[in-house]
Length: 235
Image 1 (spheres, one colour):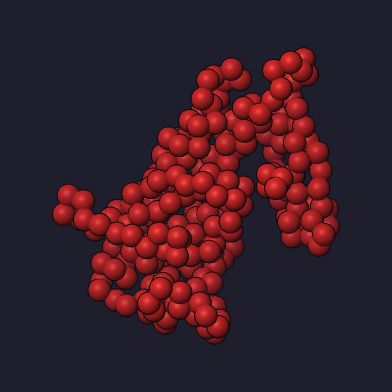
Image 2: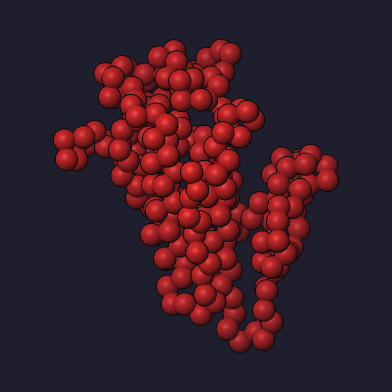
């Protein structure tokens, strides 16, 4: 299946950042969710809203942020608040988070209690459903959160390459809008540089780069071979 990628944004369009932070991101997440439901029909519908925040690691359980569900047109619908800055963690991490959220949805539809009160401890029932959706549960439970850390393996990620590419494209569109919306109008220069980081290295490796160079293709760290990502906002 081929997915439409977010369209490039013109340099002088008013409200660019708001557009990308809202409609484009919601559409992208909804498209990814539709593909999850196509492959796993037990996954319920999703209501996506955008939320502010610092773009915390999207692999942190989304249910801890919302946990809300409702019935729409007679069908169970899960709510997901998605922070635009979470896109900087990459399409794979965000798909993993969506599959994690989907596992909670399947448990609700089946009437399975997969978490303790407060949605923190994820039990063996959650791990079993997550495995059914293609995630790999941890070998043993972790204190406080249990079996929450279910990962997307390389082999499974390859089966979702188009969805991951779609989420990565949304990250690129969001970054382009951010650069354009914060550019100084008085400057005659185009292609203002911004910071990218390799968060896997300690301390993180940091570079300054132009949007044109960034969009030419992935930039890999020569130390750990991880993709460079846009740096988080200062402060």
